[in-house]
Image (cartoon, rainbow, N blue to C red; front, side, top):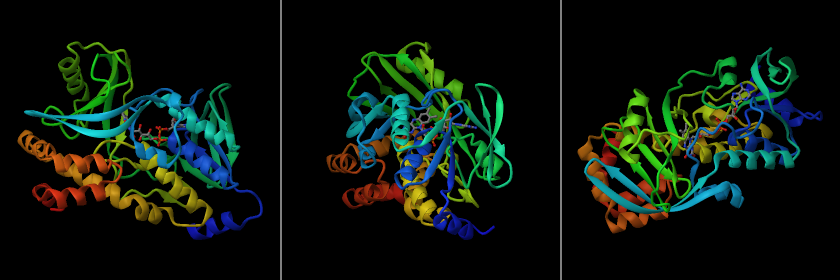
Length: 380
Ligand SMILES: Cc1cc2nc3c(=O)[nH]c(=O)nc-3n(C[C@H](O)[C@H](O)[C@H](O)COP(=O)(O)OP(=O)(O)OC[C@H]3O[C@@H](n4cnc5c(N)ncnc54)[C@H](O)[C@@H]3O)c2cc1C
């Protein structure tokens, strides 16, 4: 059936359309909240018995999260005003405005927003597959019973392993980083987080983020040999190889060719690889995507096209910067940090956060033309 025809039926029907969202992460819960606010009937299936667990994230976001909602204080672990960027032979401090969240509390905060708007969240419900276009098969993990749920729209907000994407044949073009992260005992400056670049962190970077006075979230992303790189970094940074708990997971690489809608099945968040390829940050892009998808469902718009129109350029720029950085030698990183340490550049980095790369890059080029050396490679 043609997509437009299907959506036309959904938009005009007098009977309330059923929307089933798989996954109560930030993408699924925020989308459910937005749809319910517009009077739509949304049900969320979550396979775990509690929203937000297990944690597989550092939980660091820029202040632009407040463009979506005001965070409750209990969700915030720390506010950081500096990032320390480290390369092989260089180290600089840049002023920033970042929030470190308790990721489990954040997910529950967004889940509560959805429930308060009337969304039905079914915990312990694992999506198993589709039976035709309008039936979701789920397993109730409490009694091991299989349920068939009639629905008009299906949304896969079920993370990087998305079973919905597989069931709908939408899982092509998926490339993921291994994001290996653990909590470790470490007393560090609790107003700053650290990022590490260069040949010891191939294809991505390493991070060390304080969550309290003596515990940090330490991680690396890479395509290969994640354990080896992680343990070396952990030992270098903390002096030990001791881990308090693991918080690892996959980080999808954005791919502009990925199809994120087929008929009445949509993908969002990590399931759609809507992640900034520079940082691996997916929380804010998934909230923005929820706004786009809500609008598409309600107003019969083509989500593949609308998402590209609203977020595609920014995510593509992140991807190009990532591809450029992945060609960098240790010397290139040292040079880049040299440029970033200039006062006029610092002011720009502070003014434009990572979520708005287009004005950031444009202003960097205007104020420090030597960035052209790097940016030429971006579009080569
Ligand atoms: C180590 C690491 C560090 C990261 N750090 C950051 C960071 O600092 N900042 C940032 O912005 N992003 C970070 N990310 C990325 C961020 O965690 C994701 O982009 C974000 O969680 C995407 O949200 P989501 O709702 O799409 O998916 P998820 O948060 O993965 O939520 C998916 C939900 O679906 C449920 N689910 C899965 N399968 C099924 C099924 N079959 N049936 C029912 N339910 C199902 C899961 O239980 C889960 O609740 C990090 C990722 C990793 C791995």
